[in-house]
Length: 345
Ligand SMILES: Nc1ncnc2c1ncn2[C@@H]1O[C@H](COP(=O)(O)OP(=O)(O)OP(=O)(O)O)[C@@H](O)[C@H]1O
Image 1 (cartoon, rainbow, N blue to C red):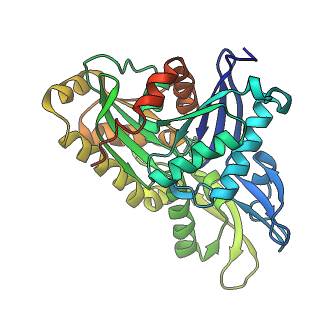
Image 2 (spheres, rainbow, N blue to C red):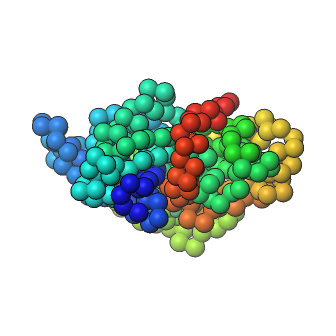
């Protein structure tokens, strides 16, 4: 596949970046983190190596997530990160003038037109011959194996790190959609706030994420086995390190508000869905993708609140990258239709 015909799909996520090469599949999956030397502006590390530095850097080094909250918070760093990952996945030597790949980038749906151009430019800078963009719900649905080109309604709820994208699709396009800046990061922040309030303990975002993954729940009736977890943080009163035991019930209380925002947005989209398509969704159920869909009890809660069956896609963390990869087959169509699907509530 190397050479003229090489096509690459990139899931430029707020939590992680995945690179898909046509004919090979997903070849790279790393956190969207860049470590920078503040004094010189030089990039020290990207991806997994940089993630290990979060919260542990000396004063002159910062580990940043350039795509916080589903938007490009730092364009320059995003460009550097994108270039680094593309080069790493493809191999620098292949990016010679006549062998430049075509790149399709899946962008968080909250990005503005200016940011879209910035991403496209970053892909070109990174060595692409052409760059097209695809919207997240479309890629997520394709990756989840949903037959989106039929005249039948499907609903996808993609919960990423920074955003949740809810969309009803039919005939290859988005009929109704909503994007909210609530996702895995907001779940982590809610846990951090709760632990500070209830235990007077300051914890970092990595600890909060670990808690969420290990014992977090959005629906307490669906009990978790390992429902107690010991965490270490800094006591706000003494300023010293302290251990506390946290239960699933605590995480439920911490997460309730953020989870409720996701649930009410799903209902809102369903209310705006044309009746014929709503009937299709009743039959087929809602498909959840993205890492946030793995939050324990969330699919059960959405099913209970909407009265519809809810399924989590196989390998939800890879859906967007797989879908972007599938869309490469129709590169020209997607490139031409760019943005035209969008109808945000
Ligand atoms: N088992 C799990 N339980 C709960 N949350 C999880 C689990 N595994 C991963 N996550 C969360 O999923 C989020 C990352 O999801 P994903 O990789 O789909 O996001 P992204 O595509 O990078 O973000 P976005 O779509 O907002 O750009 C993180 O917040 C992570 O903590």
